[in-house]
Length: 221
Image (cartoon, rainbow, N blue to C red; front, side):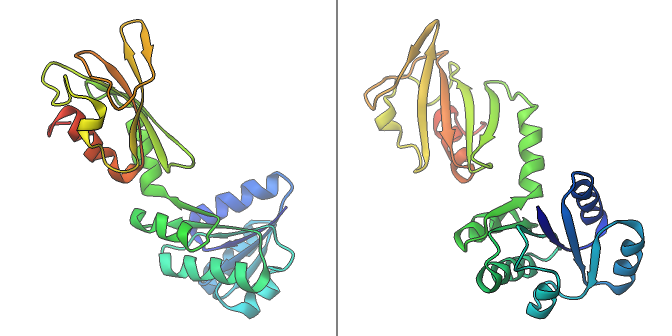
């Protein structure tokens, strides 16, 4: 495959080195001239000095033949513009942008970027995956982090006890997909009443995860 990487630093270096080791063709676009010159001596890749959102430079980088464009700069707006240009002008089939502000992740996806990756969100998720918070366990992401699945145990002081699911008014994009009650697995309905020690399989989007937990478990969740 042919990769174009826009951005410098250790991340670009190690990614390029890894791609090359697997037999891929790599072109790097680096804004800093000194860094570009140094990197060209360190790695077996084509290294171009300039702005990755410059159509002429993208042409020189082989954007018409590339398979993946990866934007790695610390500036979200630069990453977005370069990815959009690679798609619209050169028909590049797959664009991947690093998103420094996690709130921009959904915006990038709405604007057509194939994959938007928030390092902050990934690190947060990895920490949460390895942590148990009392009655909250087994948190893991699916669909590239757009959905999280959590097991929630209802203790004696949970506000959701003795209430039906339809009366809880969970936020849009959150649902209880299953209930483990002792040895019994329940596929819940709106009329299902929650009981103490129920273990709920909660499916949410990241943005409404906290609100759903508060409704089920209280303000301390």
